[in-house]
View 1 (cartoon, rainbow, N blue to C red):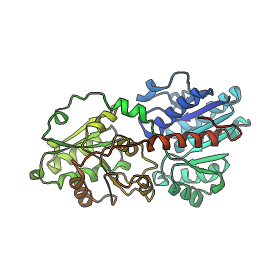
View 2: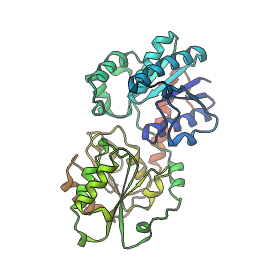
View 3: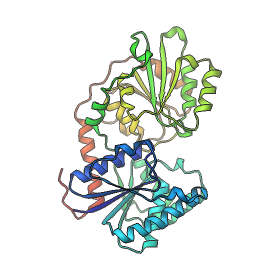
View 4: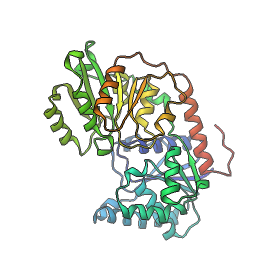
Amino acid sequence: MSHVVLLLPELEAGGAQRVMLMLAREFTVRGHRVDLVLMCATGALLKEIPEGVCLVDLGAWNHGFGRLGLSMSSVRRLARWVKQERPDVLMSTITGANLVALLARKLAGVSLRLVIREAVTLKNVGSVLRLRAMRWLYPQAVAVVALSPFMRDELVARIGVSSERISCIANPVDVDFIRKQAQASIDHPWLNDDRIQVVVAVGRLITQKDYGALLRAYALIPKEEGLVHLIVVGEGPERPMLERLAADLGIAERVDLVGFDANPWRWLWSADLFVLPSRWEGHPNALLEAMVLGVPVVVSEYDASVFGIFSGFQKYPHCVVNVGDPEMMSEAIMGLVGRKRYKPDDDFERVRDESLIAYEKVLFPEAVVIL
């Protein structure tokens, strides 16, 4: 079996981090030696590292000078570690870690199958310098994983990656784990009141998620329409702005920003509706997880790939709305809240298994893949 390295910036809560943890576990189960290498060993998900996976902390956070200093320190430390350990394959995810991995391989001068996984669309890249770095380095990866055809086309057109090197792999969802975690109890008065219908959103409080649009949409729901309350599960730098906005809109008493929870699935299971108002995404885990639990969903058209998610679930109760359109989102919420849950079948397990097989084929192209 192979020595596999999975590289991440950290283990803060996020879809990319959870996918890599799941892959680490699955590769370990299949007999591979798996090292999880972090640029900085921080984050709420550290305690979720699977048994048998070796944590390697590059400790780059000790060497300041902002993001550039963190990156350069990570490159040097990763190059030294790779040269010493000589792994068979390394897969990184998230743009910063991808650039670090590509530079470290150059510096180390070792033979290494390097696969990079882009976790979100290029709308997330606001720096011209970073885009130039991606155009220089990304085409040098042995393989690139994109989460959707939309992302693949972006990488070809804007970054210059050969389409032959790109594999589109949808995020695998850990169905059994999610359904088990969803059964955990929650002590929240709204969820214990049968008169209240609860709308839940899950994700970091950042610009990408556009919770401001969600609050404006929620404010358009008349109180006389019934008891509809909003819970947002997640933490982030936009909390003060969102709290001010809720107060300005006069909805603060009906909105609860409950903060980070390592088990967001229990909130989804208790919800009457899930909303994803994002401006951009990759292949959003929170949406997939809500669907695994059968919760009706309202989702923004963050890009055309959102329709592909529902292509195999035509009867799933959902509505796709325009990005940043509070009026349309409000109407969709009122149209779906309280709708009967969807009863998921085994399709989610099939999608998970197909994703895992696809990752093994990218990482170990010479191996026989057995599930």
